[in-house]
Image 1 (cartoon, helix red, strand yellow):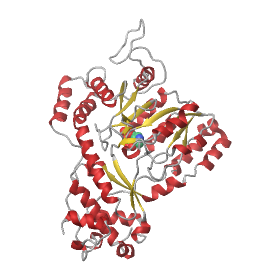
Image 2 (cartoon, protein in one colour):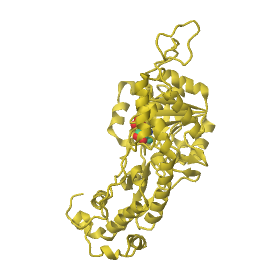
Image 3 (cartoon, helix red, strand yellow):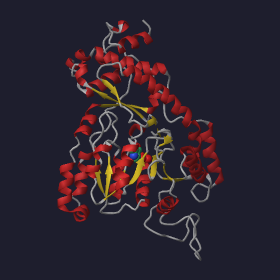
Image 4 (cartoon, helix red, strand yellow):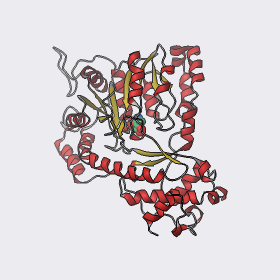
Amino acid sequence: MTRREAVAAAAAGVTIVSQAHAKPAALGGDPVRRKPFPGWPVSSSPEQEGLLRVLASGKWNRGTGQQVAAFEQKYAALLGAKHCLAVANGTSALMVALHGLDVQAGDEVIVPPYTFIATVNAVISKCALPVFVDTDAASFQIDPAKIPAAITDRTVAVIPVHIAGTPADLDGVLAAARPKGLKVLEDAAQAHLAEWKGQRVGTLGHAGTFSFQGSKNLNSGEGGAIVSNDGDFIERCYSFHNNSNTRKPAAGSSAFMSGWSGAPTAQGANLRLTEFQAALLMAQMERLETQSKRRDENAAHLSQLLRQIPGITPAAWPTGATRSAWHLYMFRYDAAHFANLPRAKFLKALAAEGIPASGGYSPLNRQPFLENILNSRGYQRLYGPARLKQWREQNELPVNDRVCSEAVWFTQTMLLGDKRDMEDIAAAIAKVHQFAATLATSSTPA
Ligand SMILES: Cc1ncc(COP(=O)(O)O)c(C=O)c1O
């Protein structure tokens, strides 16, 4: 039996003949795969040449060189946004965008619990209150039907996160937010080139933010960007990220340094991207579409194989999503179909078969740091005991708890190889499924 037949057979619930007498690798058998998955980041001469050009120019910071501005133009055009501002990272992109949206201390911002902590930290950095809305079990994204109940007279914005690079239900989020006058800030940190009804995400809300941190599909080690069609908003963001200085010199003032206008307007910080990072992004952007297409094809093949294995449910796309960035490949694992093999043991068994996987996020809404913040002097004063008591009472998110306990993730780099890599993944899961009862009763620690 060929590997392809074995996968098809396994997927159809048929025993893999070639491995019928094999042991799971976790119990000393041969692994399905020994080959590593593609590495990350990918770089070659365009990155080297770009970096050396900046080095030789002596223009290493924004304001002296042209790379950051060139990147902003190119990225805005790529997404179909009018404006782009490059910043130090995805977290600061959120913080700066919240400033641009005039989110202030005492405001409330609606966030999903199934996200990286940075989404919530950005809200807290403005001394605003993050209010969690439960997750949709099928898509792992924010459930827009639950947004109205979370809106109070202090709510000013909603941050849908396109988790794993798949669009959140933007029609649902916008329909809940707009009639109430709430701003929608898309956290697209993981979602480069993802699309909602054919339009690139980040451009459907008031603004969108991106991360170019080392693991991301577009990568400069660290880096971030804000996109928007609102020019005034982008100028407020520019000023904030440039230590309060606007782009244009104030009338009659002499700017004392390159990049300084002598026209501070509001609060600010230094969150500028460097010319080196922009040069890396210009080079990485050349590969982005080709890599994205490869992920599209591989993810589709993998989903088709995995859907046939009982107990494995790939994350669904909300209706309206037309492209995922596949920053992560996520599925739900139902132990009931695997002889009650705990997820931790399932992950270990997969790793032993040569397939690295993780269990993803823990429930963010129940992390202890939130209680510390709620109990802080500032939050007690800003929100008062009655609102914070109500916040705690509403902070029960049973669907998200379940998703966190069932999720399994593969990283985007695993989708950059060929179809056979996907078949290895499916074969490994099918093998663990086949031997689940043995693995469940084995004494290997979870
Ligand atoms: C959903 C989400 N938001 C924000 C961020 C923050 O980006 P950065 O690490 O560039 O600060 C990340 C990074 O992983 C993310 O995944």
